[in-house]
Each structure stands twice: as structure tokens, then as C-alpha cells.
Amino acid sequence: MEVLPPLLPSVFFFLMRIFVRSCLFPFLVSGTSPFKPRRFSSAPTRLATQFSTTRRLGHSPASRRRLGSDLILTRAASVEAGASVESVDVAKQQVLTALSQIMDPDFGTDIVSCGFVKDLLINEALEEVSFRLELTTPACPIKDMFEQRANEVVGALPWVKKVTVTMSAQPAKPVFAGELPKGLQRISNIIAVSSCKGGVGKSTVAVNLAYTLAGMGARVGIFDADVYGPSLPTMVSPENRLLEMNPETRTILPTEFLGVKLISFGFAGQGRAIMRGPMVSGVIDQLLTTAEWGELDYLVIDMPPGTGDIQLTLCQVAPLTAAVIVTTPQKLAFIDVAKGVRMFSKLKVPCVAVVENMCYFDADDKRYYPFGRGSGSQVVQQFGIPHLFDLPIRPTLSASGDSGTPEVVADPQGEVARTFQDLGVCVVQQCAKIRQQVSTAVSYDRSIRAIRVKVPDSDDEFLLHPATVRRNDRSAQSVDEWTGEQKLQYGDVPEDIEPEDIRPMGNYAVSITWPDGFSQIAPYDQLETMERLIDVPQPTVAKV
Picture (spheres, rainbow, N blue to C red):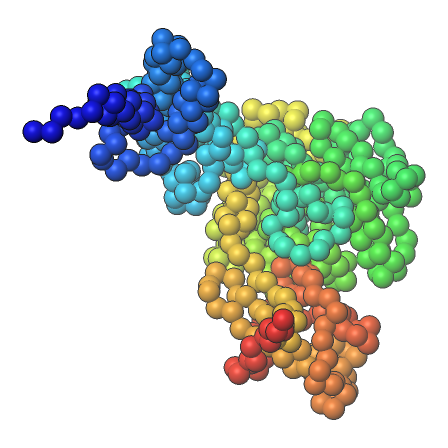
């Protein structure tokens, strides 16, 4: 057998030492095997880099061993952190599952699906859970129940020792999309209180409803739209009884009483107006839209009597969320109220409640109905309005209206205040449901030169040719109001006409501005009956 030269063993062991140091030692430090596939991550890369740096700097074997131990501990900590993150995710899922047991009775689904749960934080070390419930309105009548149930279901988890629940409400924003007057852009809900007949207590209901909503925690304003006979200056008594104007923005500053913002022509220093209808409509538009309302959850509008220009102006300028109808037991009141309900129906404003004022009085342990019965229930039955509230004849209710302090403020525990509390709960719940619905959306798609119409409460969307919409105008400019003769001829509208602007008008129509300056009011019902586009050209893509 040939004997190796004396130099070869030394060279062999020298090469083996280099192999161990450069190839096997990093795997021994990192705790992995060089013969098994491993998942690449930032941690092994950092280890290899630190180890090579150590060799280059010439650390001693002892220091390298200390470094290896430190790196092993670092990697163990990172693994533990990853497991901790995973356990936090599991804990969050357990909390959300527990909270999904809480149902919102208005929406018919759980608060997690409603998107109410925000800012969920888990502190595993202290076994604490914190989150925020963001409701649709600060006046939610069951917010205390939500808070209590949230504490209960999350506190029942075996690993939870402390639960912190914060209650909040969504920021004020209009329910309908599109451009609105600046003064109305931060108002969530606009409630019309209407009777279409004078002397039935409409202003009394409007003021007490507003202060009931304020007592429930909402930010509220009142707009007295009766220019001919404003009632608000008598029913409330603010310190500042004159409206002021911001000299920089030229906007109106509302006055306030007990935290509720107030606008009335009676606070303009003019008393009652003596002017024609078009001038009154302009005054109402200016008072309503140029006021600095700020963020409001509810703006209550005390509507003037009737169903004329002023009422239509209000419904067109302000996107009314809902209406509350006020009536009395007499048959004559029902006839006028029916006109108002039909008006709101045409304008796509849902009537959510009927208040029958001066219904009864109690004496000698008996209840008397001096004006008869059935007017309010007849409105409910005939028009399908879901809620009816009866107000008694109370001298204090009338006196509070004259004293400048609303009855719900003067006697918050009385029978009248309890009725208004029920009415306030009804209004809050119905407005929340309405806000969940999708409004009709109308827009112009320039890429295909067509008007898109999205129908509410469905997935149906259809397209209209702009010329078709323009030719179907039914205003006095296009159709003779006396004879019905068509004044706008087919050839008067070019085929390539395009709208310059489309914006909503209340809940029932859109205003379309055309290149010739004409502003067309197109009701949603009319748009649905027009001839629709079927063969739509696809938008062309420019080649680069």
C-alpha cells in the first residue's frame, strides 16, 4: 500500500476545517440542517451576514460562540413573536364572533356585519380587549343595550379579564350623493314636519321633536320655513334673537337655544313677511342653504301650510330624508293632510309617522274625544304610514309654546314628553333604515356617450341616449301647458348633444344642464319609462 506523503494529511485536515467553518457552522448556529430544504426568510440572511462580518473582523472563537448563542435567542424571540401575532389574530376573531351575537333590530343583522366594530385592540399580556362601536347616529335609542351586551359577550370569553367599550357615531354626512349647497353638506338627516293645514300644532310638534332628539344625544337644528307667520321666535327664547352674517364668508350664523341651532325669518328682524311667492321661495332658499349649520345629525324643518311653490322649493333644494305628518281628529284636517302625503309621495319623501294632535283629554277617570276619532288612523290605513302617535289636549303644552320653553324641556318626565320620546325613537330608527337604502344614481358616461341610471333596491342599471332624455322634457318650454302641444320638435335636438351637469333634486328627480343653458328636471319615474339603449358602443382605447 502506498503511503501518503507527510504533507497530504495536513492539507486534508486544513481543507476539512475550512469546510466546517464556512459550510456547517452557520447551520449549527441557526439550528437548521444543511441537508434538508429550509424556508428562506430575513432571519437566516441576517445571521449569515452577521457571522461573515464576525469572521472578517477576526473575533475569537469564544466571542463567536457568544454571538451564536445570542443569535439563537434572537431567532427564538422572532419565532415567539410570530406565534404571538398569530394568537392575536385568533383572539380578534374570537371577539368578533362573540360580538356577532348582538343583532341590530332595525337592520336585522349583527353589529359586526353592519360595520359598527372599530379599533379592536388585544393586549394578551394583560388579557384586555378594547374596541369602539360606531353607530349610525348618536341618538340611537338602544346604544346602552349595545354597550351592555358587548361587555357581556366579550367578557364571557375565558381569557378576557377586562373589556373597554367606547361608543361613538358616524360623522354627519348627507344620505344622498351629488353636489349639495354648501350649508347642507354636513347634515345627515333632514326631517320635514308638515300638516298642509294651519292651526293643527305642527310647529309645536316640530320644536318638541327637535329637543327630544337633542336630549337623546344628537346634534340638532330647526329651520322655520314659514315666512308669512314664523312661530319659532315665540316657542323658544334664545339670548341672541337676531341672525348675524359672517362678513368673510357671507354666510348666516344660526342662533342657539339649549344647544339646538335655530334659523327663522322671525330672527331676521323683519317680523312677518309681506311678499309674493317667488320672493318667499328665494328667501327660504337663502336662509336654508347659506346658513352655517355645521355638522348636524338632524335638521328639523317646520314646513309652512300648503302644497305650493314654497313646499316644492324646499323639497327640491333640500334632500329630505323623511316626513312627519301632523293632523287633528277632524275630517277637514284629514282632507288637507292627504294632499300633503300625496305631495311627499310624488317627491319620493317617505312619511314615517303621523301625529294626531289634540286627540283627547282625561277627566273624572274617563277619556273624552271632543273632536271625534279616526282621522290619524285613517291616514295610516289609507297611505300605509307605519306609526301613529296621539297627543292629548294639555294646557301646559299650549302654555309652554307661548313661554319660550318646549314642553319636553319643561317637563321631561311627563306624559307628553314620553309620547315625544317614542316619536323620537321612531324617527331615529326609520332614518337609519332609509340611509341604508341605495338612492337612484344618474350619471353621464362620456366614454360611451350615454346616461347611466341605477335603480334603487336592485341591481338593474340601464342606459339612455342624451338626445332621448332632452326630447322627453315636459316643462313649459317644451310643451304648451294649456293645449299639450309639443313645442320642442325632434329635429331641434342634435343627436350628439351631451349634458354639461347632472345633479340630484331632492329624492325624486335630477336636474340636467344642457349646452344651450336649459336646466331640465327629469323625475326618476319618467327616466324609467324612456326608450333605453341596447347596442352600446364599447369605449375605444387609444393605442400607444
